[in-house]
Structures are given as structure tokens and as C-alpha cells.
Image 1: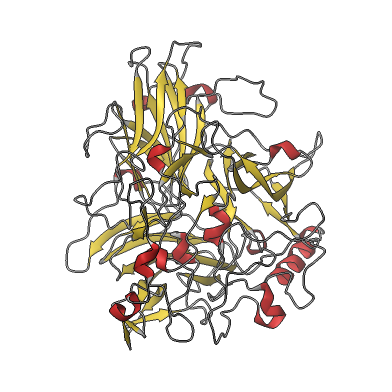
Image 2: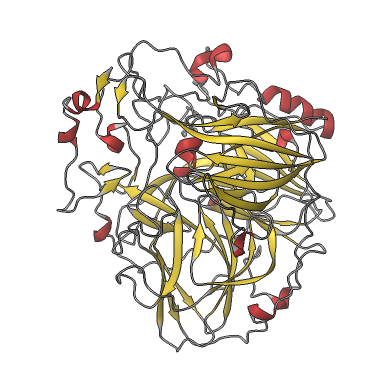
Length: 640
């Protein structure tokens, strides 16, 4: 066994330099030369971009909303004006080229009115040749692997030496996070597909191992065939109104595809479990809104990013960016050469702009918050000074009225808003009593590293990642007809049926077998039944609920980090949490509604109750994207 000290002698330590005199951080190590210093990026000079509504292709009288949404490469002004533009990927309406953006335009949906989306992979250049990834793909992971051909796709390649980064055509498949759909419309990680490029090598697989079966099932059910380079998904919207989001979910490259820009909001409204429009702050964006329309309901996705000096997205291209271990890798160690266990950017981005500002009136606003970061847990507050000593008292509360699965049983007043990656919070912020021309700041007191639920942990850098956005209070323009949040009677759905089975699962880490003391080589899921056993993505399925059954899942976190756990196509209740050696405690006040993502704290058992009413093949996983891309994801099958 090679010691970590011996690996450190390979020269990795010399690869980490200061940028503009500051020691920047990427995961556990200093940022490499050539990165943009986040402290030098101007803050609060760019207005918040409010995502418009995605154009529908439906004709009058059509019983469904139809969309043709592509994925393309383009340049976007993420950094402040006069800074370089950034090349990103994003979603947009294929027949409306100006709609391509990151985040993508919002899909507005109505309860019980289906949505039919054709998702097209258009990652090709002007000559129809495939575009390589913007970011470094690690081809040593268990991933989509088009170059492996039909037999070697969706597998971990058998390599005898360390390869370079993959530069072939990029697989994608879109998942509606929070949806309630059949397996062929879930965005299963092995149902990916390549673009219809003219230069795909003949031995490459052009689709994932589940694509054909799902395409056939969808055609049998709907009469609609999928064309090469695309997939057609049907969202029934037979669930309570809520905040959802869509993002890429291709096997082993989700972290990269989402970081490149593939994400957007999906807002479901209407039905008997919604509130009439005047009761909640509005309006929200609608199709055909004229320029300058003032919105009082705004979706807000917060993401952390790093940038190179030329404005391009920076994402680690080597394992050494995380822990300074510069190799050798294959065949002399079991460390992936490119994959990093976590990633934490140096700049905060809101709705695709770094550190924006929002002009507000002294009235109530409804914000649909989404943590869209790869790994960063956000601990948000509204304060009067942006770079004060932390922690600091809030200046205004959040009134949370909804979470992942819809409305809470009652509004919850919060001084801080804790959001792990993929969690959503539907909140009202009341600026009514704020003096005109006052300024407020949304700050982040979550750590600049792995979150462990420790209130004593050092908060984010107050000069950079500890700041998020600014609110400028100006004069009123329109009367506020919304109800004060403490008076709202929320139409929350009733509780789930009692469970008939308890299932015990585990969160684990895989340590290196070749380097003593090295950080994990993978994050894993497992089972707790007669002993803890780690399970890989390719192992036989162990979670097999019966359709219509309700189960309690006990999530035993045996790692030192907190993990946001997401179960596809199922809403659940948080039952309780219990330390391995202590008494159980009730869910947090903001967790009393339905959820699809839950924080599992280290050395604790997190219990959730879920009803599985869709037969089919789905997945459950950690939503730290670096973790799910390297084995912390498992298929599960609902039988019956």
C-alpha cells in the first residue's frame, strides 16, 4: 500500500498557487492559477434575471401542453457588464431560438392537465458535428460511456492506464425533480441519448441501455415514437401544486451537465389544493408579458460557480484539485484521476447572474427558492449589512408556506432558511415596513465545504460566498392585495397511510485500498439487514416496494457528512431523526409537509414514510451531484 505522504511527493503541492494574492478554495484545496478572484467581481450591479415562461406549441383546444425543448451551447452574460461572457449549455424552445438560457425558461403547468415534452439533444456545431463537453469528464467512473459501445455502455471501463478526459459526444436525459410520473418519463440515468451528429464514431452507443425499452413502452401507451437524439416525456401533473425543477440526469455526468447550465423551474398550479391568486403575492411571469412587468412572485435558483480569468466556467480537471494527490492513478491506485468528492464554487450565482440585485416595493413577495448547487448547503438570512461578522441576526423573517411537495400544514416563521441541494422552499417575505431607499441583503451562513449539521462550523466567506443578492426597497407602484402570511390557511394534503413495512438502508463511503488515509474513492449506498453491506449501481436491486404500499425507510448515515437523499417519483413525510446513541427528535417545522429530498445527518437514522403508487424502475440517490455520479445512487423497482 502506497502512503499518502508518498503520493504528496509527486509534485502536486506545487500546482496550487495564489490568485491575486488571495488563497481561493476549491473543495479541500487552493484554487489553481488562472482563476478569477471572486473578491474582484463587482457585486450588486446586475439586476436579477427573472426566468420567463417557456413557449408552448399547443393549439387552441389542445387537451395537453406541448413543448419541443432542446439543449444547446451559447454564450451568456453571467458576470457583470464589461466582464467576459461565459459559454454555457441551456434549455430552450427549439422553435424560439432566443429562449435558450441558463437557467432555462420556466414550464408553467396546471394540475391534471398533462404536459408533453420532446427533449432534444442539440449539442452540435454549425456543421452538425458533436460538441465536446465544456467540462472535464472522468471516463474511469461507472458512467454512460458511449465509447464503450452497446456492450460496454453504462459501465465502469476496464482500463490498464490513466486516460485523458473524454472528448466525445455528450449524453443527456432530463429528469423532472418532484414529479409523479411513469418510468419512461422519469429521466432514468441509463435512458440517455446522444445528439444526431454527423460524426458519431460507428462503434459508439448512441443511447443508454434503458432507452429502447422505455421508448417502446411509451409508444405502446401513447402512439408517439421517439426519434434519434430525443425523447418524449409525458407529465400527468396529478399531484398537488408545488415547485419542481428539471435538470439533466445522465449516468455519471450529472454533476457536469447541471454545472454547465442544464436546469430550470417547473411550477405546478391550480386544482383544489391551491389558493386563489389574490391571497398570495403576484403576479408571476406569464407568456407574452411586456418588458418591464413587475413581478411579486419570483423563482430563485441559487448556485455556486467558479470562473477562469477569461470568463469560462471553472470545474476541477484533476483529483489533485481536491486533495493535492497528483497521481499516479491507474493502474497504481484506485483513485479516479478527475472526479472530485465534492465541489464548492467561489462565486454565488442567482438565476444565472453573479450577485444580482432586485428592486422591491414595500409589500409582500413570494419567492420560490431552489438550492441548485452541486454540493453546497445554503443557510440563508436577510440582513442589513452584507459582510458583517457571522452569525448575524436577521432583519426580516421568511414565512415558509411550502416545500418540495407543496403547501405546509401552516405557515412557518423562520429567521434562517436551510436548504440542501435540490430542496425547495416556497416563502413569503414582507417588505411592507421597510423604509423607502433601504437596502437588505440575502446572505449565506452555510459552510464553504461539506455540511455536517454542526452549528459551530465556520460559515461561508462573508466577502464572497457568504453573500448572495441584494434587495433595494423603492416606492410602491401597486396596492398589495395579498393576505399577511400569518393569516393564511394553507390547503395542505392529508397524511399518508400507515406503513406496512420498514426498510433499512445505509449511507457509506468507500476508502482507498491502495493509499492509506486518502479521502474516499466513492460515496455509496447500502443495506442494513443482518449487517451493513455496501451496494454498487450495478448490483442487483434490493429496494422493491409493492405498488400501492406505504413504507418507512430508515436511512442510516454512517459517514461524517450530511447527505440530501432524493427518491424519484415519490413524495414522503419526514417521520423523525435519531442519533445512533440517542433519543429520536421530531422533524423540523419546515419539514412537516410532503418532501422528495431530505437531509440525512451524520451518525443518525433519518426516517421517512412514502407511498409507492407507480410501478416501474426508478432511482434513489444522494443529491450531492459529485456523490450520485460516483456510486451513491441505486435503482429501485416498484413491483406489482
